[in-house]
Length: 265
Image (cartoon, rainbow, N blue to C red; front, side, top):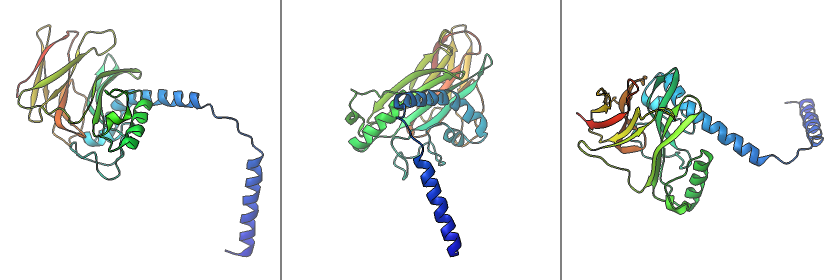
């Protein structure tokens, strides 16, 4: 570097500084920016679950890392929430099932927030949840989150229809055994019948059969970990940072509503 080059660089720096001082900035519209950011995040979640699964074209784990707010590292479904570098205000998302119905994409996903270790982490996590429009199942105090894991099950249809299926904030995640099953029948759209079933089963369950009121059935089989995701009407999957149970989806092949579901293998 020559003296001439040094002087030229200094003159450029001064010119840029002088130019910057000529601009006046007003107060940022904070409320509007926050609202717009939340709306964008809501839309990204609604469309992101399906888009990530479709575009990933790889394993279920890789598809999950494409969802908004997810850490980008590859990981197994049973990965510890205390892996170095994982922050409690960055949730982990997993797509359980997805497909297309009536020409519109649908999906079911889980968003898991690891347990904060102190109040500072809990405050930051609660703010992050609120930014996504989510409220943990607590009394409302951030201290209630300390040492507790929160999870939210979200059903999306199209690009804007987003529904909370179920959620909880617990010191210990539910651990199902044998043929135990928990089901959450849902309308696929806000005005339809309960054609979609979201549920939880033991890690050992290999098959769930869903029965519909017209007498038909849909069978959900266990998808092996680290296999490519594909659109199906029914499937059982493991969920990242939810090591105590697996989740499944069943979609009625017609308009018939949910009647019952059972573990059949």
